[in-house]
Image (cartoon, rainbow, N blue to C red; front, side, top):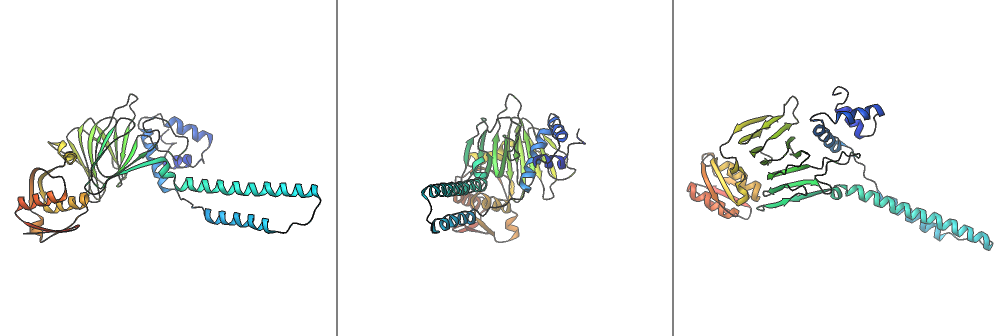
Length: 343
């Protein structure tokens, strides 16, 4: 069955170009282990690659109204009363049909243009902001600063195979930034999938983990349960994680797995606590840029390589800057969003 159903066949299936036999093969293939996850992964890939056509609704509306105006301005020839009634009725019907068609066209175009807003909800946090949310399935998520989470607005957590390819897996979320997850395990073992911008997908049934997915790196640390990571890189096998595992996705798309003695420290930011383990000033500068929107300039490479270790509480960027300056015995100057460190 796996030889019959592949990505090309599923793409034709999403487009409605398969035969009845191929359709039945896809439905049977979905019962196989792991195929349902792959189905939604390819569905998302197909959906993101579809070409969209923007209708010129303004032109259509103006053209329709112009025809209506022209028809009302035309002089009417003197006719018999009976003929006049028939002509007026026919003109009224034509005019009503054109108005209805114009309104339907406008509604259809607006529905397509605002489709993402209608079907999906996106939660965003600003610089220095932390936000908690609870999904309809009971899972709780804490978003770190400068992050976003996108998920299905209606029916989240309801296991239904979509007949319309416009819908994704109801328990799929898309993360950009950093977040801590506490996923509720459902009685039917429905998986929860976290998708990241760099092609790393995280499959989980019910567990606690933290995801860091920003421009400079992608990291996942697991505190309890088990999760499976899959990359879009060819020939890259899925990676099964256990509590205490730390997975890192490098710039080439390869996954590397290490162990950490304290996985909970990666989510310490939820309590405005920052944990450093031989963390260089250069890395801290990146964190200040990602979480607070600060542009940091360091005087020289030697200063940038100096490290900090320990756990500290700071509720805003100024407190962190003061803390760093005290620990490293250095100076800093801040001008709005620009910060410079000097020895």
